Structure formats: structure tokens, C-alpha cells
Image (cartoon, rainbow, N blue to C red; front, top):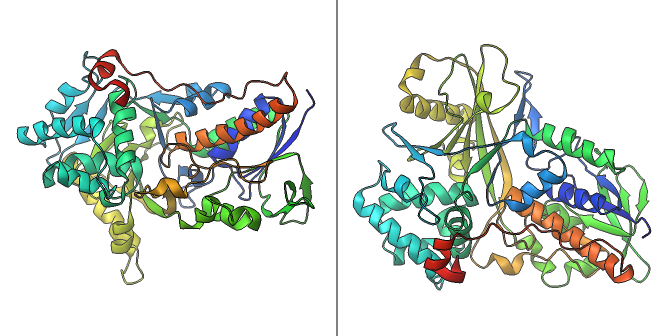
Length: 483
């Protein structure tokens, strides 16, 4: 089988996954990234005030993220993740509620934990049980909006705010009135009900930037791939008959030719680079219609430990998740410093309230609000001193899973036979997650392998996606093929 050249444009997780799969299959891959670092929207930066490396937003994987785990196995990075055996939900009164498996098979494995939740009434708990069952078995409302489904199910305001919002806004990065019913259903079916371990959170124990730039890039380079940062692509050159991509033109004037191409940039950049012959065809014409949502992170460096917990999910607060970076990372902060990150998904309201030109000291107001919430939860932190703090907003962190979004999500295969798209916004069946990004990269690579298989019978298998976690016997008995 002759070696073939592939150019991957974009060094985010989708591009890296595609590059890894193609390199593993024997292709000669050149990965081009316009930024000075890999990772795309999910990356690390150096905080100028402290000199420490911080992630722009804490990213996590879950047990159900089978393709992300496959990527880690392929690149020998699985040991860089720590699995959380339980989740900690902190009520308004500061009481800690533990979500964990307690002996029963899926989907009942978390039932005892949910029954013990302190911040929901028994009436709401019974309503929640009925709602989850209806979510698995029921149909989407006519509008497709999950908020309308909640109204149909007569879920109380308290239950919506303290359960459905807490879970889904963190998982999908959007408000409930802007979430498609099917994506909300997917979160619960695949993330909580099918398998006992699907919900377990996997935390990266090194900064994201180190994961990409050191480990994944080293794996690629060690197998002959070329990885170039600060290598922005200006345009794609088409063949004379406009049926294929012939080369990419870089901003520094270089022209690079290849036989196959993967465009793995964010959707707005992909829309700008795609040739008109692609953008005028369905469904690629709708690419510019994809909306996005912001995620904000507040980083705090303290002079003492706030809590030994590695993470906490906050209920009825502006902050949604707290991550104890000092406890999570293998290389801790400087002696005498304790680093924490508070994540706020769907942070439009926060951005509008705290980060407008009309708000004096807007970033400091948000930091003060988050710090006040943390001291209310952990009163022993009242004597702690904030050594440094900053807020970071990724304004286009995720694509919005609006009702009807599927008809705007393009496939990986474009009308140009040798051009693939990769990115969490493409048709993966998943929302904007690390898993969705990896799936898109694998699907794009699989299409290229399929092209090769048509020409070379001895080519490797084109089946790259990992099998889903199997549904437990009780889940199959209760829900059949719906789970």
C-alpha cells in the first residue's frame, strides 16, 4: 500500500484525533495550527501575574466518552486521567450530597443517592423519578424545546432550578429553553442510565496544553507526522476541474500539496475557508447559521486550602462547578498557594451583568461574587486571602444545541471527494464535547480510509469509532431499545 499525504488544518482535539487515526493507519500527516499552541478552544495559557499554566476552562471526560478514551489508549495517555468515584453536590446551606454507585444495576445504580438529596422535597423526588422515566420513553414536544417538555411534565420550578438546570446547563452549555429535547434525553440515557460507570467524571491531571503540545504532539512526531504551529492557512486551492482540493496556501506564502485534506477548524473559520462550491451545497450552506454559547472561568489563587475536595457541583449559585486544581494536578501550585477554578457554562447572563462596558470593574465584580459564594459554602475560608484572581470567557466555547440544530450540522464528507470536515459541530450525534470532537476526527479519518480501501483491498479497516457502553440488563428490561 503506497504512503499517502494528508494535510490536517487545525490543531484542536478534532484535528488531533484525525491526525492520530491517520498516522496510525500509515498515512503521512502534516498538521497545521495557526496558533502558537495546540488545543483550539480547549487549551492552556500562562497567567502573566503568577507565571503558572492555567486551562482557559476545565474540561472533563466521562465514562460514556468511549472515543476520547480510545484516543488516549492509542496515544498512551490514559494514565494521565483520574476517575472520580463520586460527585459532590453542594446545597445552598453548604451540605454536601454525594452521587455514587450503591450496588444496584443500571439504571437504578444512582437511585439511593438521588433519594438522599437534601435540597429536594420528597414530592420533587417522586416527580423527578416520573420525569426521568418519561424522558426515556416519551416523545419530544412539538416545539422541540426541552423547557416545553418540562412544562408538559409539570416539573416544579425548584426541581427545574436545582436539578435539571444544574445537570443540563453544565453538560450542554445552554439554557433549558434553547436546548433540543433529544440532546437533553441523550445526556441522561447515555450519561446516567445505560451503564453503571457512564456518569463517572475523568479529570486530566496535567494542564490541557501539556496534554496536547507535549504528549499528543510527541506521539505524532515520533511516528513521522509533521506538526506545525503558527502555520495559518489562508485558502484552499482547488484542482482545475474544481472536483478536488489541490493544495493549501499558508499565510507565510507557502503552498503545500497533498492527496487528502481535513479541515478541522472552528465552524466560523471553516465557513471562511470552504470553497464556494462547497458552501453553496446543502447542508454546508447552513454552516454560518450555527449559534454558539460562552463559558466563563474564574481562577483563584489562595493562601490556604479552601476544601480538600477535588471538585464540587454548586446548586443555586452563580458558579456551577469548582475544581481544586492543586489537588487535581500532578505538579501542584507553588508552595503556599492553592489554585481553584470555578466554571460557569452558558455565561451570557454573567457576561451581560459583569462584563459590559457600563459595569465599572466588571471582572472584579464577578470575582467578588464567586469568592463570596465560596466563603458562604465553606465558612472556614473566611480567613483565607486571595493572592491573585482572574476571569476568562471563551465567547464561542460551544455550539448551541438549539431545537432543529441537526439540519445545520454538516457531514464530514464534503462534495469535494478529498476534503473532510472535522469539528464537534459536524454530524457526530453528540453535543459540543471532547467526545464529539474526537468522534468527528475519527469519522473524517474513516472516510479517507474508505477512499483508500476502494483503491487498495489490503488497506486497514475503516471502522474507527469505538463501541458504545452496553446497556445493563435491567435497563434493557425496563426500556428496551430506547436505552
